[in-house]
Length: 180
Image 1 (cartoon, helix red, strand yellow):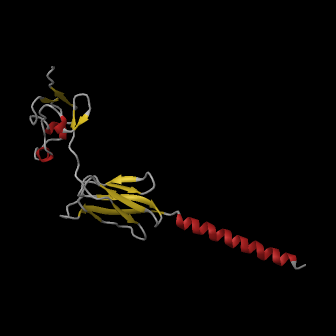
Image 2: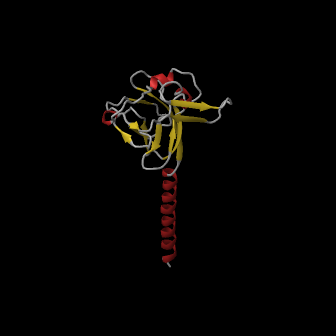
Image 3: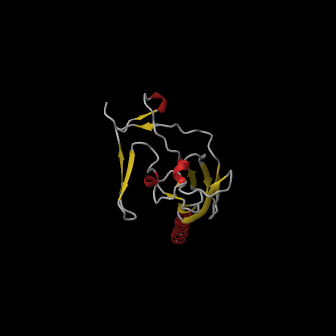
């Protein structure tokens, strides 16, 4: 006779535990959108094309021309990784934030210069037995061209840049090579 009320109380207790587990997992799996801006710690300039990824996943975005980004994350424990060539990688835990602005510090690690030969083989410049034409990055930025390839025109001896007269059309590079 007393078995029925005990059965109902156990049933109610199991139901409440089940609902608690479901509600807890729903709260944990909620996604939210994180936005922000990435800049340089040295001068405060915005950084375009910074990689913003959710650590441990394949989710990622790149900052726009204004240094802004927007990315969806799964919960407060997600960690955002900000990386850019020439700057230290920075990790930020999302927590309860919805706006995360980051200032990246310049890296003290220097990139090595390499030369790509006609066959696509990379070598250090000092290991080659011939002269190498160089184009500095600043020289390409000062020319108002629609793309980097067009900015190479007239910068290195033996390199010819061909483009049709239509804006946005394809461009080809011809490198003159002397046979030995």
